[in-house]
Image 1 (tube, rainbow, N blue to C red):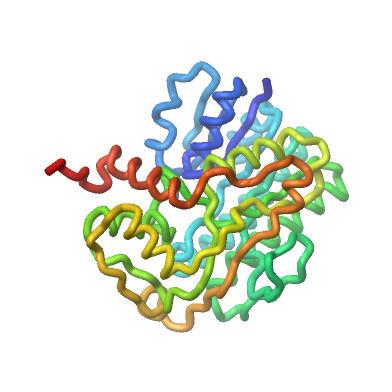
Image 2: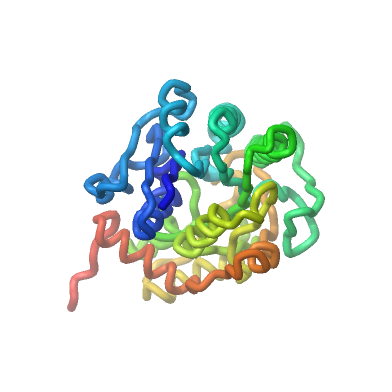
Length: 330
């Protein structure tokens, strides 16, 4: 039994991680300022005897000093999330990611706590070698394109975490997430599957940004949580970087059709130019697919939940929580 502290623990991934850890018998504390997380995500956990929460900014040193001192493992998930938020609020993105991670690492180092840092596939930038490997070179776009501020800020997080490991022997682990999806994920910040599913269930047009030929992989949050816990527990993960994601690549226009078919929706699929969706000059990556051989070799991990099953899991959650109407049997 260990005590985990999850920053950003009221968010999509954090709340699922908290559930899984509690099921395994661990103590869990989550801290979240609710900037993008939702208290409703962890409300059902508040009566659990091994669970506690704090609604607070991770920059509050007094609070974080106490929480970190009392835990065994820190999982740092608090970050700016979603393309829409990143494009609209680049200052918030940079400050939240870089300063927040620095604050967490500094506090973890004070008490010598094992620390896992969440990173992103965005750090691969415009890389042209596929699938992406953890040690591949990186090419980013110019600084005048706000989109790349997110990738750069997460790279700084990684550099900082690895520096703490090399210089201070703080046991750090970095994991790069590739499009994690599942129940509780919001489409509000540009996440594509909850947006598509919500539109399909409501019979609204399914809006594909760009021409839809860009490809992505989507990994169910339940599979991702298994990987994170495995990295937290394995001693040989320290000081390393790991991709976590699915290797099933799908074009976004094909994803829209898959959602439409799986949910038997009458929605039409429409295409929205990037300039209209995100503003002039937006740049996107055409492909993003991970090489997961490194984490598979260490943990034996690979995704188990199909994309089709995830789509239905998202749809059921939206209907159960009243986000979309529940069909009336004819």
